[in-house]
Length: 331
Ligand code: MG
Image 1: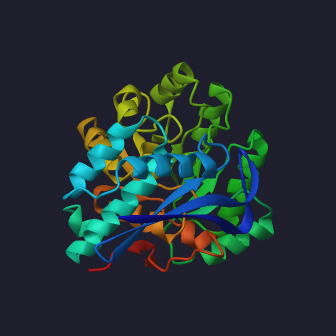
Image 2 (image 1 turned 135 degrees about the vertical axis):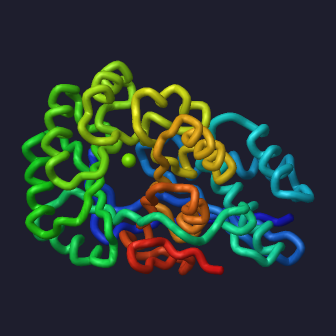
């Protein structure tokens, strides 16, 4: 088996303001594996607030492929080998997993969702993410998002008045259902509760990660009082975290880059269902490669947040289509 590792910088349509700062794009590492004349690609997305870097991902992949020069006969042995190789490195593992799944799907001449034993309909709605910004910027994004039935807005600026103004601006433009992602930006549980109470009158479906992940006691307090469902994002990384947040959130946001790949995401979904948690499939800012891989799990989710290709300018993969506010999975 041959492999090739390439760096890429995925650029945002508009610099993207979130609670962690403003960015123009995201570092990506693309992996292509070639074996028996079939090539397949995987992707690691590396936003700056997470520990992995282009260098760490490349090093992990080189070490892995140095030790494992041949593809095992079946996908499950490949995945087991990968996850028993080392701990952590979830984006690097997600990248290798995506390449492996794509390779085995290509070899079988079937789409990935079918190889996973899943369906391509019915599928849940996909959210369209609006960043924080000026009224003109928000209005432009809402115009771009007209096909989508659910919008998602990033709040958590640290200034509750600013957050309210953002919602008021959106509500002047559209009455579509909104999901709110506070990105750990609300530091005070009483203020967060007050904000959630206000949002519950603004056609908001749920609030994602209202408080910092370290504030577990405050999260529990908020969970018992919240007028809206609360989704965990930063508070839940992989399968090992799901049981621990079961009594603090109503749902989880699963991302391939956080959990280590498709197999881990499927484990998380199983656990979430066991605990009656709602499931969102989300993403970092990713190209069509990783977004298509995540989208193949759509039929297992209540909602997907996979609008990355709508928000970037130089996505090299034409793998994802949006129709009627859903990510379409081809036959
Ligand atoms: Mg989030």
